[in-house]
Amino acid sequence: MKKVYFAGSIRGGRQDAALYGEMIAFMEARNCRVLTEHVGLESLQEEGERTLTEEQIYARDMAWLNECDLVVAECTTPSHGVGYELGRARDMGKKVHIFYDLNRGRLSAMLAGDDRFILHPYTDRNDLFDALDRISLEK
Amino acid sequence: MKKVYFAGSIRGGRQDAALYGEMIAFMEARNCRVLTEHVGLESLQEEGERTLTEEQIYARDMAWLNECDLVVAECTTPSHGVGYELGRARDMGKKVHIFYDLNRGRLSAMLAGDDRFILHPYTDRNDLFDALDRISLEK
Image (cartoon, rainbow over all chains, first blue to last red; front, side, top):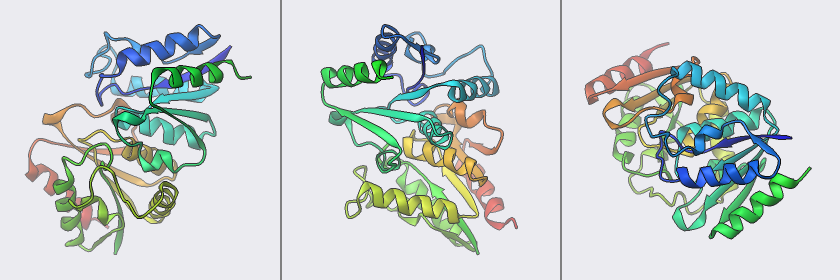
């Protein structure tokens, strides 16, 4: 079973929380284990997780990033945390897939210009979930 | 002369562009050379730099990040690029100072929880520029 680190905005804004949840459920239905499943919970608001300190959140997420087989990030809503995770994941040599909605702004040049990242721009949901299907099922 | 990599949001939103410009000018008046001076130009809009490809922007910024003596980031406006740069700077062993306005939201747990970063939360401009003065003048 493939272990996926899903990265999406929390404190940067939760407008895409429902989409994150759908992407996570979609991968989990295709034999993936998503370590960061909480990122897709609509009950998780911008203030973030309340029962953990910043250091505990950080330590847990970095352990998951180390453990994962691949990273899937939804990058339409700007987020320092997601950018940070992608920079660290790159330096760990992880495979990184980046999704973003072309209708809603431009991807950072730091992400778009890094040839180690696999970019998945989409203009509708079918494009997004077709790509996610291929990623989930590939060996 | 100290070489500073200043990181601020471009495609994530330019609402703090004037503040970035003031921070850059302030450091330059204190014997710092800010490599990423363009981040503070109000003429630079969300679409980013038009005369360079993504790969050219990326290669230039990564060369500057490698070259700098320290990183100063203004992290009030969420940005994938800034988060990415901070993750990479950390892995390069750079000294990183992070500023953010406490009145305008919470800093990402990935940045707040990383004990390698030096955090400068502020509630007014005096706090910000006092800290920036100390950073600019320290050996």
